[in-house]
Length: 611
Image 1 (cartoon, rainbow, N blue to C red):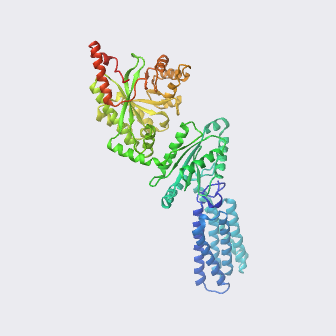
Image 2: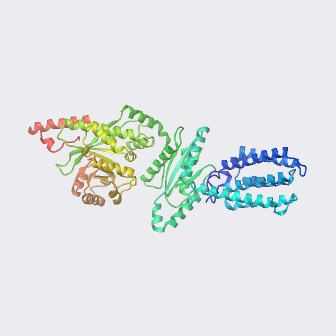
Image 3: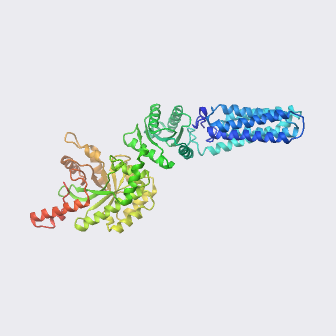
């Protein structure tokens, strides 16, 4: 295991005895042993009979013990780490002096039991080698000082043996208990140990009014090291990274192996900007690329919220191309409050962008996608993606998803009631966090029942990178929804965590090709080969494909030639409120009737989207 760093800080470093070995715990425990031993020594010195020894010397040793204990309790956390060894050695010497000078033999033998305090303290906090030195020193003193009182040579064997046994048992049990909080490979705190440090740090920050930051760092493409060089090489990399980063940390800064190749860094009294600078130093100190998410704590926030926000920053860093640091600022709290109020008032808009057919009369709309629209006064520049992240961080996503889905189903029912022959589909996005809720499928069923929107005309779009394929709850919800007629679309396909194995794992009906692939279609270069692969893949798996982000006639023509059946983008229409769609349909019917007096011609070919 890895031990305590210099100057009594809370970093876990090479060969530490346990997760208890922090400056504060060491100072309080050793100080308490000193005070308890001193007080008991003063009491027994005052009442014990006999004049064989020197009562004044014993009383002085006990008083010194009390004073040293009080200094540890008051200033111990700020003392250099090495000074604890001096305190412990001094304690053994004071016990030996008290045993040698106690007024009677019985009391001297009794006081020898105090050597057990020394052994237990050393076993609790020091690595085995140093703990053994302290325990051995106490045993030698015990074996020497009792015979020096005129007792037989073997008189010290029992107290010395008890001292050894108590130290060994405490050391073994302490290390066994600590393994639950320590990562055996690196010796750093593991996730459980880090979370135990996090809540007290939050309490301290709240009492002291000081800031605190948290960083999550992920080693980029670490899996390739394990795959190509073996797990031993990967383990060596993790150990080297841990050692390198520990040397760059200041006292009080806590580094942990959060899981796999992810490290967590707790920075008490540190601003976001200072945390970013330190994170950049850590990243520069190792040869492999690292992605990092940085955030800071605000009063009233829980530890889980703080970690979640740092994780969002880490996710954004990886999505932006890896090997970078992204700040997920805690100053988004006013935005979260405003969003909560907007959800409660229903003051959010839902607009609709047509999804068109590329095969039937080119450009006729066959469905719409519901898109959230809201303007924040606290943060006017925030994007829809930013709103979703805030909703997920502040536990608003369930209410937000329900509001959008209910509004969209009601608007679509209204649209189809006005034009019964449209038979359009409604696409609505769902957060991966919401989909992982046990009752999600039932909530969707309730909304469909309340609004009257048919399940077989609803498509739920799940952003692929947000869906944890290993989440059995999410997969179960998807199967339940599909059994009831709802179709599932994987949004932004081709980015994030795309893989054929995930297509086999995630029940789905539709792929929505990310707009970055469509944007690459230019008249001066061939179409991206991956588009042809996706088109062929969709036919093999019997999946519909929707191409997102179509902005030009040329892109539409290329997609049609490649065999794509559906598309969506500004080339066909922007997003609009449902009232504008209804007005557009009414205008379209009027134009069609005037042209050929055939009221059914528009309905037969789909409706003409807004230009």
